[in-house]
Length: 277
Image (tube, rainbow, N blue to C red; front, side, top):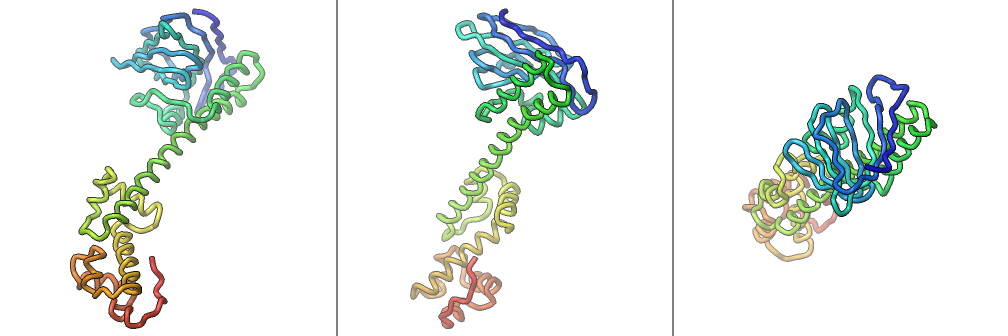
């Protein structure tokens, strides 16, 4: 063990979140700690090198840019890599809001590992928090502010990741409809292709378009039908089946419901007053 720096917070503010201690360490080859339990939450962040974290009969291999959470009362053991021992820093905290804050950042007993995608913001804020404690340059409120900035860096990335995943599912659903609307597809087929359940698919469409996937599918088919009515000489039955409607009466019903006019009347009118979806 070498180059170890630690601090203990002296003026703790009891409440939603409290900082207890923290520090940093450049570990020697195979240096280890534990197995042991801790009374508070600890967040470790790997600055350089590699190591292993053992908890609940699981082993997590970590490297630079990754971190791990230690929960109160959990027996843990961690060890530096033999060839490339890690250098890490840590912060210990607790409070009645600690569990909820961690959960919002995607961290819990079931998800103990995180990766820093903040472009260095998390590392900078955590090291600043530790250094300010060492030098006694900040009061407890300022230190808590820096800890909240650390959480903010993780939280932003979790939200961005979730947003990107949602957008990806939604885009895949639209692509599926665009490429398969002419067939007798169902909403369950779209959900199966995207690999999400129908309820989640419904929520995505409501969130993005304010309409259900079923209504969007019908509206998309009708927009194609209008284009065919205007630009081709296909008869109504041909247009109906080409747009994925199972029969002409169903096509008529949906067309009139949306545009207050039948397909035949629209074609005869030869006007473009209908607002397409």
